Length: 82
Image (cartoon, rainbow, N blue to C red; front, side):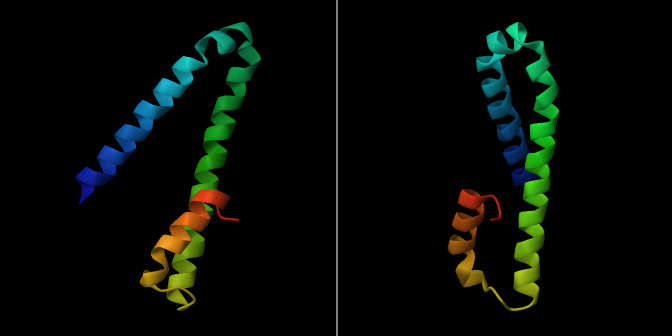
């Protein structure tokens, strides 16, 4: 059960590395931009936590069912929890 989660995390890290590498020249020219990277990463973590909390609450209160999974995933993915 842990291995799939680690694999997803690893793929996410690889994607992050590829994206950061593609902006390396811009970051080298504008060092101040690099200070915002941790803020963006932190914000995405907060958004993910809020999405998880919202879905768990909806499941616990029977406001959502497992059959609604695809709709919920689509909504959370597109709107970041909005």
